[in-house]
Image (cartoon, rainbow, N blue to C red; front, side, top):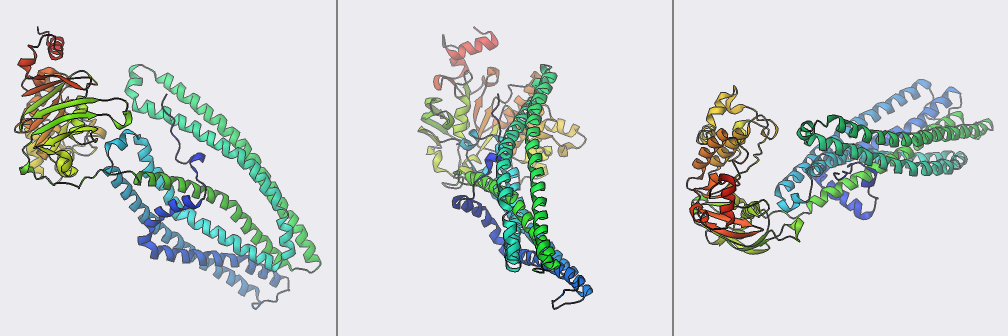
Length: 600
C-alpha cells in the first residue's frame, strides 16, 4: 500500500501562533520588502476603509433620531444625513478598491519572487535531496503552499487587520455610548463561546479525518493513473473502480458525520446569536421606554454589535488561515535551508583543455538513503582519453552507481575520481558536467518541439546546428517525415515518438553538446532490431573521439569496447577486452556471453 499523502490544507498542518512560527512567516514576508511602498499605501487604504465603514452605524442612528424628531446633532435634515451616508459608503468603497488592488500587486509580485527562488532552489539541490522526496510533495510546495501564502498576503492578512480594527473601534464606541447595554450584551457571550468550543472540537477532529480519507482516495487515483497500462493489461478496471468507490464511501460517511455536527453548530449559533439580539433589543427597548437612550442609539448599538459579532466569527476562520500559512512557510523554509550543490566553486574547465582520461582510485560508496549497504567496494578503473569502456554485470552490481559518481551526483565515502590526473572535486561542478553527456535507457524528453529537445544540449545553437546534429544522429529522416518537421510537439515525456526515435533525439542532443566524456546507459536495450541498428550507427558517430562509458546488458553492443569491466556485488572481478574475457574459464563474462549467444 502506498504511503498516505497529507493534504497541504489538512487540519494537522496548522501551526500555533508562537513567536518562533511568526518569525518563520515573517521571513516569507521579507519578499514583500521590495514593494513596501505599495504595501504601506495599501495599509493606509485599509485603515481609512475600516474607519469610514465604522462611521456608518453611528450616522444611521442619527438618521433614525432625525426621523423621530430627537435630533441633537450638527446636521439636522434627513436629506443631508442620507447624503452623508452615501458619501461615507462611496469613500469606503474607493478605499476598499485601492486596498484590494494594492495588496494584490504586492502579493502577486512578492509570491512570484518566492516561486522563482523556490524553483531555483530545486534546481540547485543535490540528488541526495531528491532521493528522499516524492515529486508530488515538491510540486505541492511550489503550488499549494505558495498559493496559500498568496491568499494570506492578498486577502487573509488584510481581512484579519480589518476585523481587529472593527472589533476594537466598535467595542470602544458601544462601551462609551451605552455602557449598561454593553455589559448586558457581554453576559450573553459565555453561552455562545462555550457552545462554539464544544462543537468546534468535534468538527476539527472529523474534518481532519475527512482530509485523511480524502488523501487516501487521491492515493488510489495517483497509483492507477500512473500505472494505467498495468491496470488495463490485467483487465482490473472494475477492481480499481470498486476500490476508489469504497474509498469515496468512507469519505462520504465521515463527511456526513462532520456535516451533522456542523449543522447542529450552525443551528445553535443562529439560535444563540439571534436569541442574544432579541434579548439585547428587549433590554434596549426598555432603556428607550425610560428615555435612557434614543431609538437611533439603539439602532447604532445593534449595528455595531452585528459588526463586532461578524468580526469575532470571521477572526476564527482567519486565525486558522494564518496558522495554515505558517505551516506552508515552514515547509518552504525547510527546503530553503537544504544545502545546495556548490556548482560554481573550483577550477573552471574549458573544453579544449580537457583530454578525457578518467581514473577511479579505491572508490567505496554507500547511498545516503541506504547507509547500511556498501554498493561499491574498492573500485579501480583507469581509462585513457578517447577509450570506450564497458561496464557489465548482473543487476545491482553497481554499474549505474559508477557513472552517477562520475557525474558527481553523490559524494564518495572513500577514494577519489580523477579527470586528467586531477581530482574531480577540484573542478567547478557546472564546468565539469558541461564536459559530459548522457544517453539513458529511458529517454526523458520535455513536452516541447523536437527542435527544443535537441537544442537542450546547447540552448544557444542555431536551427542549422540542430539540423546537423539530427542528421548525424540518424534522426533527420523521421523528423522531416512529420508534417511540422522540427516543430513537431513530442508530447509529455516524448510519448508521441517511438523508443528508437526518442533515443536518436537524445543522441542528437548529446552531439549538439559536443562533450569530451560520454555515458551510454543501456541506450539500445529496449529497442527492436531495426531501431537498434539505426541507434547503434548514431552512437558510433557520437562516440568518435570521446571517452565513453557504456553500461550494457546486450553484450553484442560492446564487442568492440577497448576495455570491459565485469562487476559483481560492487566489485570488479574481471577486466579486459571481449576476446580476452571469453577465454577465462568459469568467468562471469564468459557465462553471460554463453547465455546470450550460446557461445562456448
